[in-house]
Image (cartoon, rainbow, N blue to C red; front, side, top):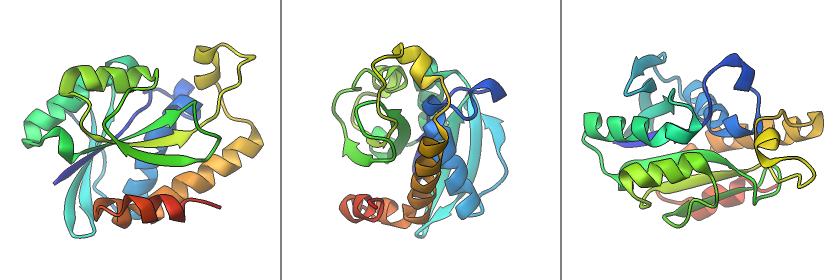
Length: 184
């Protein structure tokens, strides 16, 4: 069993912001693979399904970004999983818009949601980093809580769909082919 976690902030005011790329990614996966309806559990929303023959639980923490680790820890405990079973999808200011990188472990790169997960379960889980770039002329908080431009929205929507369409590769452990399929 795997736990896929999409990071974001609950509420309609945050729905289409850069900081909610993780929520958007897991929503696309839930739709693509016809997962169950969302149910409240583990301080978040849970959907269940299967990808590439493996049982998958998807979590959208409702704790707000900076406390995401509380929800992730609750889900790990409830489903008796380890950090190695976790894949976290989140926005990344260090990557160009629409670029995706997969990594296991490492630093949080200034991302408060990832920092909080690290605090609760340690750093040894997979991260799918979705690039939103950084506009240095705008305060970082205002930027990530802002909505992408129409051109950025188009690129990010295509990226999110490619993530969902290629999830079998990630679940099967083929991170490199997964990332290659997201280029272009």
